[in-house]
Length: 494
Image (cartoon, rainbow, N blue to C red):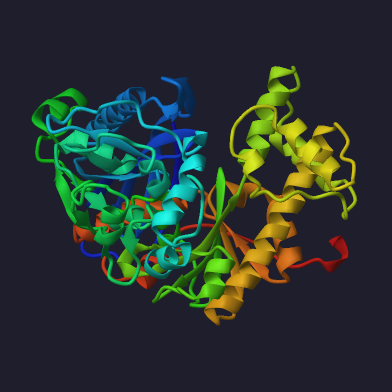
């Protein structure tokens, strides 16, 4: 079990030092998942990870899929662990919030059965659907309504490959988990906004696009906003995990980036954020979407955030590149400590070869080091078959991409950024943080690592009345809760 204690001030309602509000956050990424207990005691916010489990795509039924049955079993195991820990402490878990990655879905029939294990966005099946979709829906029209960045695995392209959808509903992954916990079918709005079938201005389903693609109008369940109650645990689920049957499942920013951005520890309005993990989500928080042709050409996305905000960002490659390299090296018998690998990379001189981390060649798994080296060769440069050199190439490439994306976002949204916040796993990567400061020329503040879980818990706590205020007040709790690291530009490193 790991524990992170956080001391927060302000924005907490009621309760002396002995009164504790406890919430369970189910936080699942593309490579791992966790169930975390979030405790709020007066001015103290504490996170305790009670269950960790691996996640990943599997070859199944002719494609790359998620083993949802195994994933849901781990969620139940995590909730059971949370109930046990809370019981030992004499606590009652007030609600459960779920966040995961975006885009992917499972199909559920009228009897509530999952028809097949969900496809992963890393499966290549949707590539062939892009052109037929664009023949029916002009890309400019799509962007003008949805504001969504073009990615070949966006939900609408995946759905275009499906057949015989009558009588079925598509539930995005966090909504699918919530359904099997509560038997209530809802679609949380921050994740709905990643489908390519959501109106960015109206905040509703773009039903004309469903019709144009021959998809049922009721393919997705009704929308729900962060902070609203999805339902309560089914009696058999509650009994199995040891929680009261009335335990609520509350919608949070179910797209993990929405929860992470809600917990960006900024006391300024003009900040850029980088949610750095398997993917990198790089952008600004806005009040209104940017739906211009220039924004579409730059491939920026307008996704919903908590409290109706817009996450204006570009979805970039991320630390998946390094983790896949580590997996390949481990299979070859080379298993260095990550800190040692990054230190060796940092010791190399600047100016080495770089790649485009967004290249579709890097989406699928399998021998990432050789694919990176091959991409470099195609540019006429050479990259040694050396883990430190490959790692430095990845870090330089990500930092360069971050700087370019932030500059583009400032220009397109007519905003000036004063500070860059890096949250998530990448905030622990000192080399990446320093290179980001160097390439952007801006101060970088790193942390918290657990931004997604914090955003999940704080939205639940606010829904329960134990935290008050808007995003500004929630973020003040985060600012005063964590020791953050600051990196200033060192131009000599460029």
